[in-house]
Each structure stands twice: as C-alpha cells, then as structure tokens.
Amino acid sequence: MFFRRQPDFGELLRELGSFTRRDVTQGHKLAKYKKAAQTLLKKEPASAHALLGLVACLEHDIVSMHAQYLQAIEHSDSYLSLMYYAFALEKSCLWNDAAKYALLALDRAPQESKLLNAAIGIAPLTGRFSLLNKLLSQWQEDHEGVRHPRQGDYEAVTEALARQGLAEQDLKTVLSSIGTAFSETDVMLQHYSYELVRGKDSAFIHYRFVLPDSLVATYYEDVVSERLSTMACHPRIFDAFSFSVENGTLYELYDCMERELACSADTIKVPDPDKMKLIEELIRDVEV
Image (cartoon, rainbow, N blue to C red; front, side, top):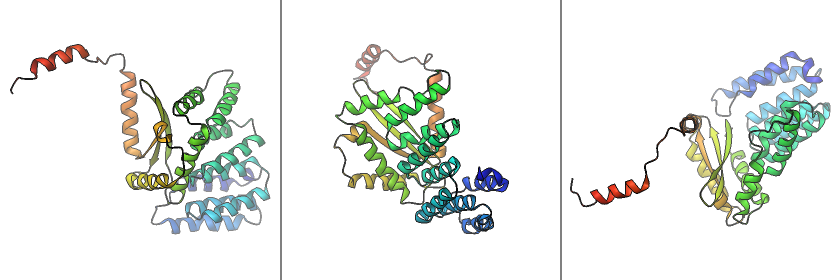
C-alpha cells in the first residue's frame, strides 16, 4: 500500500491534522508541506496529492482539495486514499460526501475497525440514522454480540421525528444545510455530539457543534441560523430538532456537570412538591 512505503508521509499528515485555518502564520507553515509534497510527486504521486489535498483543505480551497484527492485516488486503489479524502471532507463540514467516501473505504477493507468507527462517527452528521443502525449492527457482529452504546438511537430518533409527522429525510435536509453553512466559513469543528432529550410527552434531537476557544461561537451560530431561516424545510422540524454552537471550554464544563449529576442521581433529594406548596402558602402574605 502506497502510504506505508513513505515513512515521512504519515508524520507529515499527522502534523497537518492538528492545524486550523485561523493561524496567522499558516502560510509560512504550510510552505514546508507543499515543498515535501513536490518532492514526493515523482516517486509517490498518490501520497503527494493526498498531502496537497489536506493543505488545500486547510487553505479553505475546496476546489483544489477535491482535485488533489481525486488525483490521489486515480494513482492508487488503496482504501487509505479514500479514508484520507473522507477525513478532509469531514474537516470541511461536507458531511454527505465524507460519509460517501468513508463507506467506499469500508467496502474496500471491511475488516478495518478504524474505518467502521469513522463511518459510525460521520453518519449522524448526515441525519442518516438508518445508515447508523446498519453500521452499529456490523459493529455488534465484530464485537461478539456486544451492543454499541448508541445501538438504540435509530428507534429513538425515528420516534421523535414521527411524533411531529416527520421522516429521516427532514432531518437530513436540516443537517445538510448546517454543514453547508459551516463549509462556507473558515471554521473547522473540534468535534460534535448529539443527544436525545426526552420530555414527559415528547422528545427531540439536539446537536452540539464545538469550536476552538479562539473563535466566537455565537457568530457561527448566527451564520447557521441565518442559513436555516432561508431553507425549505418541514414546518415542524424545529419541534423535533435543535442545535447549539459552543466553544470547547464551555462544552467540557457542561459535559463535566452532566456527568457529575448522572453519578449523584441516587443521592440528590428532590423537595416534596406538596410541602413546597404549603410553605409558599404560609409565607405568601408575610412581610420581610
């Protein structure tokens, strides 16, 4: 496989993977990788084009990014070329395309657990929970019947949508618009998560998109909201779906608080509502 014959390529790719698009010295730093790619062009063209594709991704030159990765795929039929393309597409928030190439890579090498995990990670960004369900079944088969922690999400999401007269396609539409809005900016997400928020009589799906602390999360949330306000969608989609854009520090704080609450759920004492009502009545007319 072409990538493994070039020991320097893997190191260069790992270094580039930690870059963002907002570094003021980025142009100077990327020159090193462009030069390395030019050196690789003759002896390892697939590696060179993959490297140049990631550089283009970091420069937010999406047209060049596509062209470079497609040339890498032409030079090699390795699943790794497809995987690296999927990685750059996900970084660019082109989630549907990222899922497509992740699945193509998985078809080439179904035994590679990293490819399966990558596809599982991308699938929810497309809104295709039916696809996620299939991937999780494959994950369960590979783990001797042990269920994945998110195994029941397909049924829960389908139910939450159906309560509002919605289908998976409606969720796919709104997430596609969010991805497009992000892709038109220079943002690169740190990560994302989704959760199913259950109420007494209903439930909805909430996505959290996490940005580096150096970026103003509210600005990007406004950009996404503006895009969503202009898209054609089911009128009740936002009764079943919501999203937030958060900085990494805030996300970690909320995540820590939620874990602490979950761990102490058995020891938290909830006030008796009848007693609280009685106390309110007793002090209602008392002057302080």
